[in-house]
Image 1 (cartoon, helix red, strand yellow):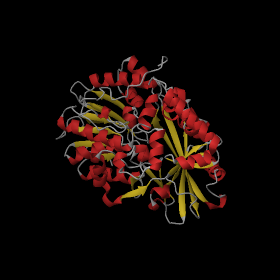
Image 2 (spheres, helix red, strand yellow):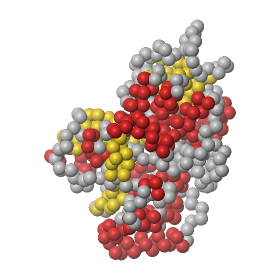
Image 3 (cartoon, helix red, strand yellow):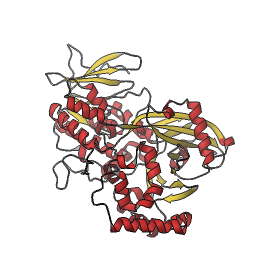
Image 4 (cartoon, one colour):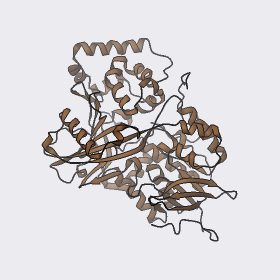
Length: 504
């Protein structure tokens, strides 16, 4: 698709206002869909030349489909659930949730099954965990400032060391004491050892009454999450909007007349300018600040201090019997590099070309400067195959092939300074650029789930259509009720109040 009809050129005018959306991930496409469905002009730009969906895309190779990590479709917001149903209808499957933890040569149910854990840990280790938990409850840290202190408060030190430390440090490449407690509060909110034990003992309850970490089923698109965002893309176009692939925004400026001018490049080196009345950005905050002119040094410094964790997944296609039924397995074993293993056939049977095959996705968390990132695909596939065999999940003669996907900036890092840095950037952008809106995980530097990204998109589209900012997308986070700005109990910053360390 070329840019005719979506670019305002000198000597011409558009008959309607146009919003430029940067990024065709869940947040960006939701904005685009909502605006186009309302008859508003919108252009969505995506740097990827092929796939929409961001880290929620689905890749196909040799008839096998796999995600960039697994993506459950579950939300406490009926608005979001209804939106997904509207897009895919009967192609949204109800799937059972099954996941386990691999630790010390054994597999443990997750969420915790107390009898399973007791049997596999053994009496002595179980007693150590119990006493450690009681100690944490009797002598809690009243002011937890990092991930380690927060989790120890909730579960006790011994369970932290067994079931949290190794995996978390694999994911982030940093010590648990260097990770903000904010990340634990957001990702494990509401879960405690007591609740996990009760969940394992109590009769089944309605999902609306269950902590999100403990849900027993979820919805999932028949052909993977990319199917959802391809449907959103198609609806944007059907309603008169545009989704333009292979377009990376490298420059943004607002002229004196209030028109945005975006410098856009494609992979062939071609550069062009596009115009819009407002801009929605889901690109990483650091990249956004780099694209803007004349940014104050303090804001540049805050943006450059934001950190990201990269990610690669090695999909191993196999034949023969299914070795495990889990959707995914957390690998708490420092002896292998893999952090988590997806079983895409358990997400949806249609992710594989025939029932006698399967596809396992081995997730490796790294930085794009690491040796692991630079390894040849063939070497990564050989390593992943060997680690599957080491864990007892395949035999060598079952392997049909492999495929590697690298994903930069998959996770915004919650270090001790991130809140301050995001606050500095937000304050500047809100004052200098009222027609610039931030959405989504990287666009807001918030480790949000897919449903939160959708809600930020819906709220932002409403604000643009109303010509106001009466909805605050920054209030959207884990298990939030998505309040309007200024309602009782809401935080004006949208970030959880977690004490910073003296170094922060």
